[in-house]
Image (cartoon, rainbow, N blue to C red; front, side, top):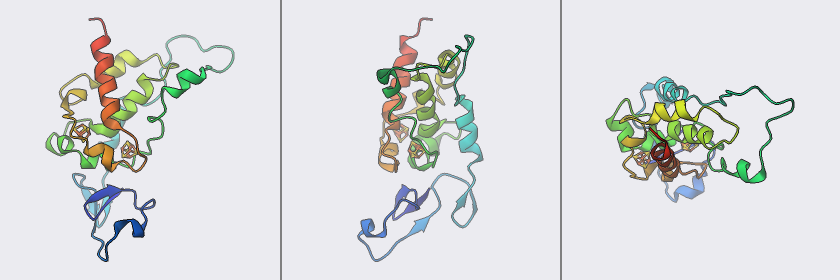
Length: 171
Ligand code: SF4
Ligand code: SF4
């Protein structure tokens, strides 16, 4: 990802005609440490991604065949699994700039991707990891992340769904 004329996007998917301008101002992703020129350091971004345990967690013994899903269950991760971890959303989020410990829209959308997966059995620990002031409760629904996402995903909605799952839990 990079910032072209004030908007974050993936430069490989950007079309010059869409900018409607003779002048293109290209900058590295805002809020990310710059290594050199347009190259940003994604270490912190990926550490936040790993913090939400972005993989299927199994607690019961695997079945003899694949873990099957119904068409309806599979549809529950539509709009979540497509994330390419480009960083455009987190880099556009004012809460992400303000709080260096905020997990950010990308990590939280990926947490939702596994929480909503009916094959996963690790929701409790994943929800524990995001149920704090640097997790889902830092989002102020400013919506920048949605406009920034080149895959047209909706991190705000994903964060709201995590908040709902947390509130549904019995303490
Ligand atoms: S909706 Fe939440 S995650 Fe998205 S930009 Fe706003 S504060 Fe950040
Ligand atoms: S949610 Fe969209 S903008 Fe954010 S990292 Fe994934 S693909 Fe990129």
